Length: 207
Image 1 (cartoon, rainbow, N blue to C red):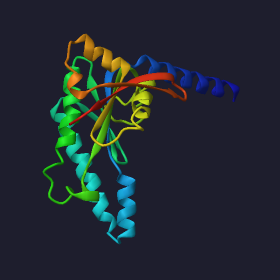
Image 2 (spheres, helix red, strand yellow; image 1 turned 90 degrees about the vertical axis):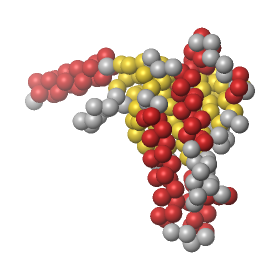
Image 3 (cartoon, rainbow, N blue to C red; image 1 turned 60 degrees about the horizontal axis):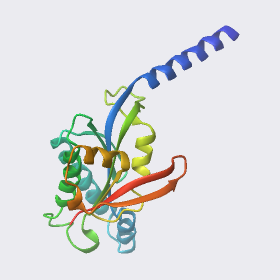
């Protein structure tokens, strides 16, 4: 029995080492549908059927995913009203910002979800770094796990509609590539994030 336990423990160690050795440098993107919880509450109070907010959310997710793919990004998963995507490190970082902007603008031509509380608005966060593969199913998609993924998700919490936030690491890459980011009026901010410590990031404003 003890031998079986030892073998099992060794297998677990090997699995852990394999997951840590499988890494990739990636750009990370989260794009969120804004005010979805408030909209669900509005539907509830107004006796509007659930399929109305569900349809609105599905329109956001599907259109966002389509645009990401058209810009050579990989959609990793949807998390409720949020799309998580990655871009290869050889991709032009300016293209990632343009992807987010195109998503923001793509809902302006909708007929049903284009006014008042019904209007679809979103926000985005961008980060980059070395990621471990957290994929635990038979999917072939590299599911990134690591500090930059956690940071990317966390720095977006204070964003408003049509705003992008990027980490200082991504901002440095933008500057190194001599990309004109001033058109987005970058605003440097910082926050002490639990588990991440002192974190600098930049908020970008989309006209």
